[in-house]
Each structure stands twice: as structure tokens, then as C-alpha cells.
Image 1: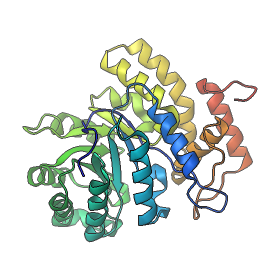
Image 2: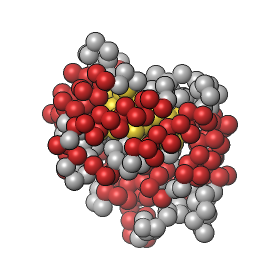
Image 3: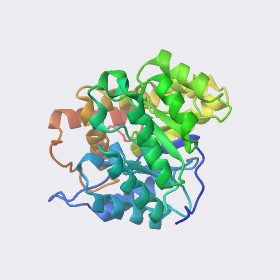
Image 4: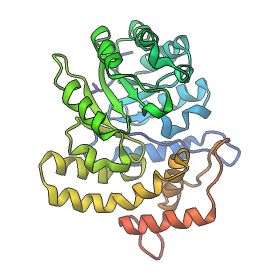
Amino acid sequence: MTALVKFVARGVIPATLIAFDRDYAVDHKNSLKHLRDVAATVGLSAITVNGHASEIHACSSAEQQELLALSLAEVGDRLPLVNGVYADGSHAAVEISRMADAEGASALLVFPPNSMSMGGQLRPEMALRHFQMIAEATDLPLILFQYPQATGLSYPFATMEAIFDAVPSVVAIKDWCNDPMLHEKHIRNFQLRQRPVNVLTTHSSWLMASLSMGPAGLLSGAGSVIADLQVALFEAIEANDLQTARQVNDRIYPLAQAFYRAPFLDMHNRMKVCLELLGRIDRAVVRPPLMPLSSAEIDELKTALVASGLITGSGR
């Protein structure tokens, strides 16, 4: 199926969350309400579903397909939808890619297979074949998800260049290298290739610094809560308006500090709680092994929301 809206790998691309009922079933009503709220933000380039923010690790293939189909029906005629491809095996990744293409997604965000975590960087042919198999199965634009080196799932610089040379449908990377020096190297080299590969930063804990280096855009789960602030910051940096950028960043800072502290795995859990506190979803249920946040941390998130100007000190 041809995508309803063409994907362009630049600008602000939030990754939406997924809501669950108290019995852990997908809450379609709240999930779609959340999607509509995010999509109403002026200035977005696309929206990502079935990514980290959607607790993709805990969702079945059928749930992923249903979420994509419902999301496309809801906003797919207005915004391109990027679908995550989260799989440990390349054949499974191909199946997800074909499903997303058939449903009408506009692009694919390709996660590194966890099966490569124990030395995959030493076998670049593994990463290359993974992307080749996906590209052979679909013509959709691909976004390579680059992880920090410490995870064991990052692609070496030379490996990424080999992928770009061999797989022309890779149009961008979602850069989470978590190394400012390497991040700038990616931006300066990949975006100036003969066939440019744009950098979409996901360094949301230091977003202003990252955007100042000149990536083409950002792709971030924090956009599920602060898409409007991300747009304002991106546009200010693009306009070389440092004063406005600093003012917007002053509002982002309290939430970035709250979202991305240890344990890092709770970042989207915290974002989901903020959506409940803001009245944007009914309840912040996460699927195990994630666990609910403590009342003390929820109070700290309330404080961060107040500091960011999203709620008043007396409540919503």
C-alpha cells in the first residue's frame, strides 16, 4: 500500500506512547486520544509509533499491527507515520517491515537487533545484511537507529557508511550515540554525503546542545509530552535565535532532568505519568517488567511540570 503522506527526514518527529487498561490490555481510546493530541501540534514533520516509547518490547506482533492501522486511520492523511522495526532476527524484521508497508506507513525506524549485542560490531556484515534484507522487502525509507557504544548495539562509523553505500533507502539515522564528539562527526559527514543521510537527534537530555550542531531534526519520545516545546526549540535554533532557544530550553530542562535520570529504563514510564498528570490519558499503566513509579517520584514529576510551565502549582 502506498503511504498517504510522503516522509521527509527532517524536522520534529515525536514518538508516541501507548496506553494500557488496568488489566494491561491496550487502551485504544486513550492511545488514540494521545496520538490526536500530539498530532495537533503545529510544525511536526511526522510521528513515530511502535517505538521505544510505545513499550514495543512488551507488545505482540498483532498489537503492533493494530496500533499502526488505527494510528493511520486517525492521522495518516495529515502526517507521515514512521513504524518501528524491533526484532532480534532479520527474518522477523522483514515480516514487520512488510506489514508496515502493507498497512501504509511512510517510513521505518530500524532498531539494532539485540542478538548483535555480544560483539556484533566486530562483524559488520551482520548489520549490512540486516538492512539489505529489509530493503529487499520494502521500498519504504529507512531510519537507522544508532545506540551508544556502551550498549554493545552501536554501529561503527565505517559500518554505517558501508550500509549507506549499499542500501540507498536508508535516508536518516536516529542518533543516540550519546557522545557529543561522535554526534557532531555524524552530522558533518553523513549530511554532506553525495546522497545525504540526515541525522535525527534523540539526545533529548541535552537537546539544545545537540541541535546547535546542525542535525536535520529530532526523533524523540519526550515529544509525547512536550512536542510543542521541541518545535519551538528547533525553530529557534534554525532561525539562529539564541535568546528564544534559551528561553524554550529553560522550560525543557526540568523535565529532561526528570525523564532521563537513573534508572534510565523508566524514562517513558515517567512520560506516561506526566500525561496522566496533565489529563491527557486516564491512567499511567505500564506492562511488567516495568513497574509503577513511587509516590515520591510522581511528586517530583509534578514539580518538574510546574517548573516547565505545563501545570500550575495548584494542579493541572
